[in-house]
Length: 147
Image 1: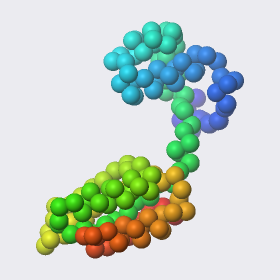
Image 2: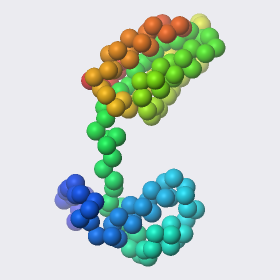
Image 3: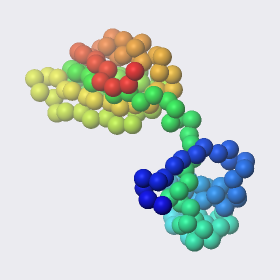
């Protein structure tokens, strides 16, 4: 099967064979560093390494988080202690999960920051941007992507 012939389906985990569920468990254990090697993780869940390697690149957990909206916000911040920390606290209070943060070196007393985050309730992004713009030391806030 070529990459062009691939198709995806979402299936209730309750109907999957046990080996698929155990493969997903091994992948989670390795990603979270609960086990140091695939051999140890396979032993812990009770599947062979060959079964794990057979399915590992073909099975994925459909996470509720993937349905959440991803946003990118551009900020211009004063070069003052605590300004970026305040921005991050505001994002945390809004239950935003920060995915990336890029900050420039301050020039003429201001630095640009681009933050990409996942937000569980995308209806609140405009109020979040308003809250960010009201923070001490925030000069400008622009929503670059997301709706």
